[in-house]
Image 1 (cartoon, rainbow over the protein chains, first blue to last red):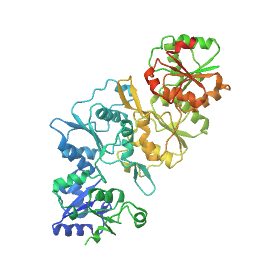
Image 2 (cartoon, helix red, strand yellow; image 1 turned 90 degrees about the vertical axis):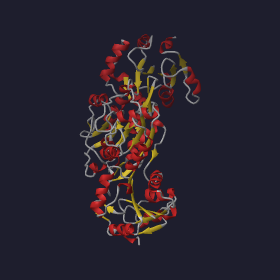
Image 3 (cartoon, one colour; image 1 turned 135 degrees about the vertical axis):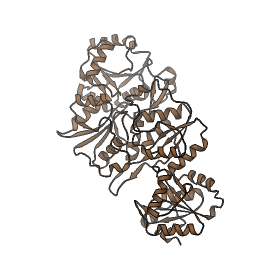
Length: 275
Length: 271
């Protein structure tokens, strides 16, 4: 059977493991259970993710046990791109490295785009051919030039539009909230009048891909463990599998009690309680 | 009486426009130009009117969404107070022209990830965030604007929120509204909009020109949703010219926005 773990807040906090996490995971692996890591973070390549799991948990995992919204976006487009076809990429350096890792060819990425000073800069803009996807993720350098190009690739060239996640806000500390990835992409979405296909939890796209990669046939033998009701537990519910909420991360007991629609199958203090 | 004209884009006058405007001026009518554009200072407009229409205009005859934003904040800023400015170079020059002190304008490459803002300390005395079209608007600017509004209580105004911009009717692009949309959604609020069809510009013009009798004011424009709606919102008569964006078909399809008069071009106003 498989255990799908959400990453941060479940198995580690920052650079330290949640106490007991590595013991539990080693135990599950020794019982021949498949443990797969699933996160919405999209700044890590599989290689870098593997290194984190090794450094923080002391566990060796293979690439195919690691899925993030970025990694999955790479796998998703790779399946569908024919030779010579490429994507227009909006994202961090980590995401571009993830695309490299998957052998996906991309344009548009980076810190330096043309300085679009006005709409008229796009009068004579000729889009490249063979751009089949626009992939949207957090990108600090997303400016009007990138937005206009993405708009043109989607609207004029028919590129399929996918995004890693659309969270409008990001809690960066106890005292500060900031705009999130959803805010970076909101203008593009509203001006297009469409929403992208979202890869990250709670969308089931990652589950479909994991299922196919690992031949997961019996849903009743899968448990999704996570600390976030809206992403992890909802993801499990959408995928039709059992869920376990751990209270060691973003969700505490009172938040759980306030939430009436999203109900985990099990509730645990931490992953160490999985016996 | 006053005629308020919406401006027209492009560098050539609509045939006969110059004659009409000169004629109105000779009849002692107050002709005021109103546009949602934000890239020109009043000085630049004076030059454009001279070059394209062969007319000399004074500063207080020209109002753009950018100029009005500058006047609006200038009225309310105390000495030492400033604004966080999202906009083009032309808008920053407009702020300079009005003596408004601003920060945040231009290209900001500071941030590479959310965490760069963990320890960001906002400047004090930033009383407004002014939003307009800005080719350089990126995450660093959005996060700072968000912080000034949410944490520091700065008032948030924008020149316009048009979601799309049509380039010569051949290419559709995201508009100023799209640039600011992420900021608005993450804040969960909309800015106060200065551009047409909001009547804020009319209120300013009214005060500056002492327009007491609204029945003597005519708003002339080529766009139903901005110009004509602006006139309607301001409580004045409107004249739609069919020489610009709006054709007869579009006019016939638009049931809710009704101009008082319809003319083929501004030249017909002489008749």
